Image 1 (cartoon, helix red, strand yellow):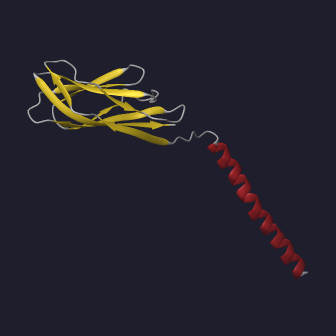
Image 2 (cartoon, one colour; image 1 turned 30 degrees about the vertical axis):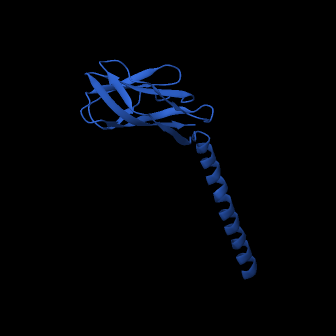
Image 3 (spheres, one colour; image 1 turned 60 degrees about the horizontal axis):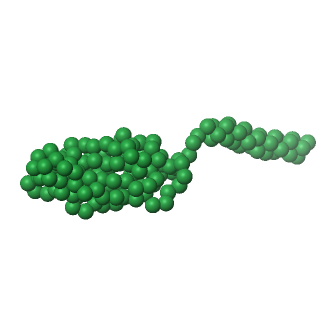
Length: 149
């Protein structure tokens, strides 16, 4: 009788153990159906020397996205700017591939960030240039465009 009782209890324990992960997995898979998984990446480029004289724009420098996944969206744009000694403050202008642009005032070397391009398609050629607020401004910049897909 002890053998049968032990066998019966062993079967009940195995059944109980095997049934728990299945119900936990069902709840987890329902939650995962509502989660959108995104990956992220970036592209970057540098400008040459940008010289702006008497309020006129400098030469424009192109930064290409290269080949990126379809459906990508910008998640942030930043520029590390090096301002030459003696330069007047200026506006740095960033123009995205579809023509939308934004500018930020710069008076010294450092990093500026743009959130105005967030959620736009990053694919194509971006442009960067400066426009002095004084007599002459000279700077270089390194731009990074972060995106999700």
